[in-house]
Image 1 (cartoon, rainbow, N blue to C red):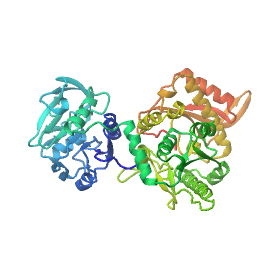
Image 2 (cartoon, rainbow, N blue to C red):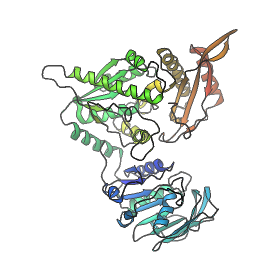
Image 3 (spheres, one colour):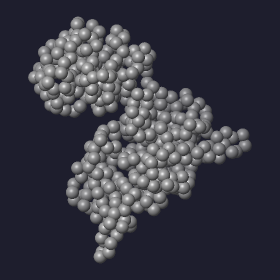
Image 4 (tube, rainbow, N blue to C red):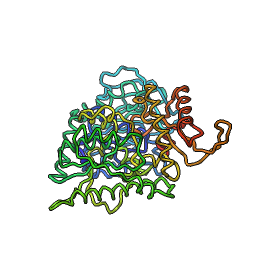
Length: 518
């Protein structure tokens, strides 16, 4: 997926809300991207931003080293909005004052608007916002005007209308701030003058054009799983190049129950897309034998996927005068890229289709979803007419059950986990909670525990129930499942899945944990 012209850039100062800011901008139908603060003004301006938003961050502007911004950017005339740390950085770099007053503000806070501002158009004089700061802006920069205050912040917002620089101490991107979405829209539409043209239809049109420009009349392979990401990527590319596309479903032995049947039904029978089904379970189990490190698992799986796609490409080009596809479609998303580590971003875990690819890749990648969040992908899938059960299927990791088995991956453990996972999903659906949860699944730690079943001693595996709520997988909260539902799932797993004698419930949010166990 190619970058979109004239974006709004969100400069990430390490805030947990930076991704949320980017999503809120897109919800206003304006395209946004996240960039690190280490870029120079020239590098940022080379992207032709229509607006720049500075995120919050965990540090003080007085800490060393605290993240900063190239001051040349302030002279470029591009509208800038600083949020929390971003507001304090603006105040300090432009000649104002920031101090640790000993009176920080956290949580819901009363805000008083004291001067006219485009950001506060049609706002009431008093409202509730969400604060989270220790330092406070005590003096606005020369040429700026304070536009709001709170009980503990003499400057809760300020602006310099001549330079089109705006700052708010609170977080308009969170739902706890009343009319926060309106404030962001005022900045985007009124201050930056951006037309709200980032829509699901425009995304499809742009990416169809980009795919056609990239592949021309050549043949294309698509790495297809049963998940929504690869399904939507396949649909976009099929709309772009039609019969030039061949989808490849690799049965790794690490898929969810019924995965292969669903893929066959959707893409071969319903959409009439050329589909190659490769049964490769033995190869994956052999390659993973003795491997326990999760990053090594991901890289082994990513490499083996590519080798299989290369074999399929050679087979497709084996005819007289034939040439195999040299383009490979993947359902990489924006959070995958962020989590795998890009530029200054820390690597949380490599995704097999981002950080797990072999260096000697023979394909040119086609990634029509690379700049999209999951909610945008689902909306695009619906617009393209994909079945509801595919579009709204919960996310599933590319390496499959391999990263839900904590320890060595074996055929026996994969079979146990697949059966337990199917029961978790079945009961979650029966309880009417499937659409309300981001993910719900089973995990198998490769340890054995003592139990008693009947009148005898058992020594079998535990299963962990993992269920979370989230908007985009960048952060997540553990789901408060009804006790009777947990009891029913646990009872069914122990009674119906051979090799399991204990069930636990994971109550860890992200952060500090990740959604997947590996």
